[in-house]
Image 1 (tube, rainbow, N blue to C red):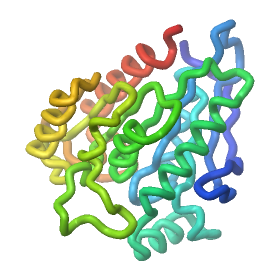
Image 2: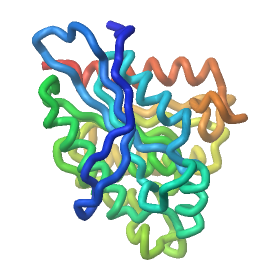
Image 3: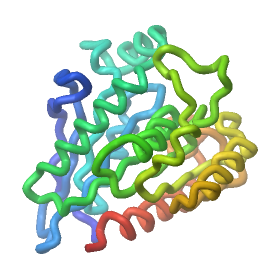
Length: 252
């Protein structure tokens, strides 16, 4: 069911280390029945907490989810989102510990809402895809995770840093919820071989997952405001996302 009415606004939530951070919230307004509303955390891509990232939050609300996009670069603010993102990238990006703390805060916030059905998923794009994979392995209370072309899930030792000290692929044994992966076959991070390696690791540890790979698409092909947008592949990919969430977040 699609919801024509929604409430969308920027709010403040409690993130990592008890920090107050910005988050963009959208939820459907109208009859949701007696089953409550499922929820989704949206982790923005490396370019930042931009207009398209907020469109994703509203798109989820239109499809019946209470969605929340934490601004993981908000500690670099205040300021315009692109200036804040540039400052965060110059500093080496947000640390894994901080992003997981912010994401846990978003999960906890959504679960506390009176209309929640108790199910919470997560979706992330680009760096957020890597973080969504990590969240599926480390956070409490997640019921489904979607990794959209998360780069550097597989990382060489020389690519690890103080802020990103562990290769995410090594966390796979601890994955505690089903995972959906969306990838473009023309992407270089992750490239098709890295996707194959990730899939092999998921199979090895008996995890519940499904991967969808798209010819003619590279990195960021859902983002309508970027040159890599691919309409046909994006429409099909979103159908896969909503079918996955319907299975794991809307069911009793």
